Image (spheres, rainbow, N blue to C red):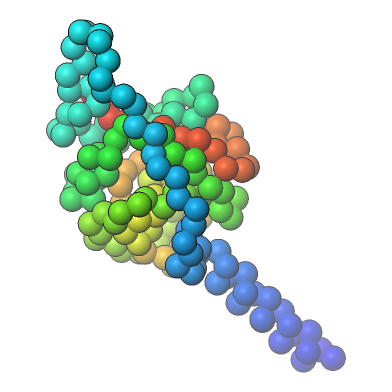
Length: 174
């Protein structure tokens, strides 16, 4: 009986560890929504040149509801491709009580590595299409391509909440 209990615990532990992969351990075909891209054909003549389209800016604004967070993007080919998609508003799904994720319709260049640990506020790419925003700190055995990091993530978990959430990403000059 004790041996059966031990085997059951081992199977349960293996099942839980496999199911905790970011963006899922399978290659699902999730229901993908198109990012909401603001209309640039406004009659407003005020110049916002460079606000959202400055390729040199590594400053990112992440908005969740009425709360905004400043983040700093890394300088790499992945973030250059990511910035080309901005601004975008997406519906991020909840996973594992520590992250929100969204599958892009097209892949970005990758340079994945295992960070060893994830910190609250890390913005990563899992595979080439899964954008992940982490709101808890934990150890990981998975590989990611780093996009950047929220500068002050202290209220990120409460802003993101426990379910799916709409998030806006846009570059800034400040």
